[in-house]
Length: 70
Image (tube, rainbow, N blue to C red; front, side, top):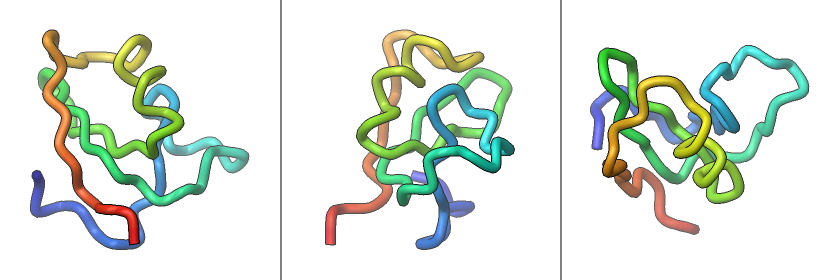
């Protein structure tokens, strides 16, 4: 887990851009570690696509739960 996470952190999926105004908007529940990049925070729907398509994802992937379902 990271200290940079906040409870209001939205999903940055599917590929880590996070700047798309039409992006997901769901709360991030997972953190995906990446090589020489900030970790990627994603919702359950975008966890799979981020593992396959985001830049710098470690393999085998390192995934942390950052927010349990309320």
